[in-house]
Structures are given as structure tokens and as C-alpha cells.
Image: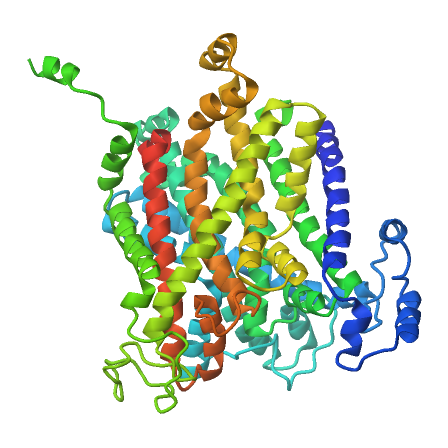
Length: 336
Length: 298
């Protein structure tokens, strides 16, 4: 198992290095330098422009800048934001938990509803239940999530007044950040109503971000389940007279879970892409929105950090899926 | 007797066979029908649309659709905040969305497949380099990559296509490589090689056609997600620029009149949903038709 882990890690290193190169290179290809963007309409004379570029270290040759960037990274230093002059890591510390909280809730929402829905559809294959569930799943899978978000806002926030439109918690609550999770912090703070407010803020973004994964998980669970239900050992279990529910939960589900785990991993890893849109709609102060704004401001270190984080999440989640695979299925571990 | 008659009959051509198994699925047929309708709208937009999509009827701002109170028969789906006819904008928008989506699929598919075949053929440093580069590209969320590309190249039609194509390219490379590797070991490839086929001919004429099924399915799904991505970029203000009627851009500007004129927001979203749904239905049908292994299960 250890050897398997090491082999996996060894193939990841070049990928990560490649990501740093892309993160570093992409944003520098964007026309306009950060000094120009900061100054905006006020034009700067050439001398002070050069001085500002020098102060930010942006007048160095690119390979030196890249080298310095790698050395910085090796010290876990993400640099200073060019716009706020705050360490990027400090901004990340505030924004990252917001995205993680949202992502986790969205995935839990997707799995809790998707797996039972897929199982029900597989069990009642060909029935109205199956068609209804899979039809809904296909609609969810085809949903433009930014529109879905607007629709939910219109119904639940504007018409019914049940949920807030934006942010993580109502302004009247002062929540001290401890864990980074607004729910936990609001609960720890003990202020009455704070937890409920945080939950209400979380509700719509969770649904919006979770809709596509929910559809994918439901579809995958159904087809994995159908595949397993045809196996001989399931027939044997049925023949022994076990109840359908027991056959389903004890015998079939475990083996059907492998492909489901894979899509959950893939979806989690790429959820940040969905988070960009979801966070924009709900003004959720997470890293998706932060990266998009940083690209507009040519804030090199922030964009680099953001791209790196996004890729690292994807890579780590996929590594976890691989390891899980290895744990569940020894054949995978020993292959190659 | 019957068996004899069957043996005499010509086997159906692959295209006919594909169509027959597609036609057996009601979902795929419905998807095909809706998609054909949307494509027609796109192709014949100037002749179908009742109004010019950018013409502003200043006297008729935010008219509701014809079935609600205050609706006007001249504007079937109502007008937006600048008094433009929503139906006409949607019809012209079909043109933009379908064009960008199909071009971006082609722009991802051709180089993607070429790289995949190359990597399958050269299982040395070159192949490894290609696949590692694809790993890097896969690790970045598509929409983030697209936003970066658009920030570099600037918004616009061609750049939107490129941005979307770059994000989806690795999936074609991976699929093409995997399929080609499986084919390369087979006897017919060896036979063709022994018969003296050159490398290019071997890969493109002999191997590639047998790798197509998963690639076609991937392209269909890529087409629907490209439509979503075009709209997403438009929604973020990074796609095709106003006043060009594009579905996502229409949604973005509808946000401001959400309270007073919900139909301005509802119509483009529904159009996107229905189009994407149709393509996905067709994609599901294609997958079942092209990959009989999955069909038994699904």
C-alpha cells in the first residue's frame, strides 16, 4: 500500500510543477500589467511606472521571477496581493473555508439524495418511478446553474421571503472566526439566531451547487446498481430467500459503490468550477469569486495562488479516490 | 425458408443501423427533434425572427409575454429592459450558441484526437510528455481556464470558442489514446502494417475509425456542456459582448429586472435548459446505440 502511495505521488509531482508553470505563465500573458490596472484612468509617467514595477519585482526577467516564485512556494509563501498588499495566504485563510463549507454541503446534499434515488430507480427499473427519477436527473444534469440560482432566488427570496439573497450570515450577527466554518462559528458564538441565519444563507447556494453532482450521482448509482444486480452472487442471495432490501443494501450496494465513489471524487474535484458561478450569483465570499476578480485586476500572486489551489484540490481529491480504490479493490493496488 | 431469406438480405449500413437503434428510443428521438428545431432557428434566424434582435422599441419597455395581462401580440415572449423583442433575440441567440459550441467541439476534437493518436503511437518520452501536459490541463477547472484564456485574448466570438476548446481538449486526447492503444494490438492492424501501410495511413484510415464511438459520445456531451459554458461566460460578462443576442448575456442583464419582469430571465434560461436537455437525450441514445455493452445495463 505504501509503495502504491509513493508511486502515485511520484507521478503527481510533475503535474503539480506543470500547474505552477501554467499558473505563473497564464496570468502574465494577459495584456496590461498590474500597475496600469491599479492606476486605472489616471495615466502614470514612464519613470514612476518603471519604479512601481521595480518595487513589485516585475521588471526582472521571467525565468528569474518564476524561480523566485518556486522558492517562495517551497517556503509555503504565496506572496502579497498586489492590490491589497496583504499576504495572499491571509486572504485565503478567510475565503477558502467558505468555499469548502459550500462544497461539502453541496456534495453531502448530492450523495444523500442521489444514492437513494439511483437505488430506487434501479430497483423499480422501467417503472414510472424510474422514468420520473431519471428524467429529473437528466434535467438537473442539463441545468444552467446560474439560471437555476436566479430562479431559486426569485421563488424563495423574492416571492416567499424565506431565504436571504447573498452572503454567509445576516449583518446584525458578529461572528468571531474560529474554525472558518460559519455554521460552527455561529454555533460556538452562541448568539441566538446566528446559526439559523447562517443555515438559511447556506441553503440556496448548496442546492444550486449540488444539483449537477446530484444528477450525476443518481445516474451513476442506478447504472452501477443494475450492473451488480445481474451478478450471480446477487441471484444466489435472492435464491437464499433474503429480503430485497437486504440484498440491495448488504450484497449489491457495496460492489456498486466503486463507480459512485469515482464520480463523487471527480465531481468534488471539479466543483470549484461550479463554485465560480454559484459564488458570483449569491455573493458568497469564497475563492471562486476571488479568483475571477483577481484576474480582472491582474493581481498576479492571487491568480497564481487561486489556480494552484484549484488544481491542488483536484489532484488531492483524485489521489484520495485512487487510494480508496486501492483499499477497496486489491487488484487495482497491485496492477502495474 | 425465413432463415434463407434473411441470409440473402444485405446487412444494414452502419449509418442505417445507428439510426434504427436511435429511433427505438423515444427520448433520443425527442432530443433529435428539438435539436433540429433549434438548429433550424439558428440557420434561418433572420427569416424566422419577427423583429430585428437589437432593435429597441422605446415605447414598449418590459412588455410581458402575450399570455399575461398587458401582453402585446407583436411581442410573443415580451420585451426586455431596452424594449427588444425577446423571441427574436432568442432565435438569433441560437445561431451564436450553436455556432460557438460546434466550433469549439471541432477545435478541441481534431487536435485532441491527433495528440491522442500520437501518444498511443509513441509510447516513449513524447507520449509521456503529452499525457502529463493533459494531466495539468485536466487539473484546472474548465471555466477557470476559459476565464484566463478570455482575459488573455479578450472577449469575443473566436476567443470564446478557443477558451472552451482548450478546456475540453484533454478528454479527447485521453479517450483517443486509450482506444488506439486497445486497437493497436489487434490482428487487423498488424495485417495492415505487414501489407505496407504507412504510419499516417495506419493511424488515420485503419485505427481511427474503430476508435470513434467513445469520441462521438464525448463530442455530443461536449457539445451540450459547451452551450452551458458559453452561456456561463456570457453570464459573467466574459462571453460574446452586448448587444449581440447571446443566451447567457441575456440572462445577465435580466438580473436587474428580476423583481419586476421575471419573464426576461425565465425565457433565456428555459431555452438553454431545453436545448441542452435535447442534446443530452440524443447523447444518451447515441451512447446506447454505439456501445451495446452499456445498453444491456441502461
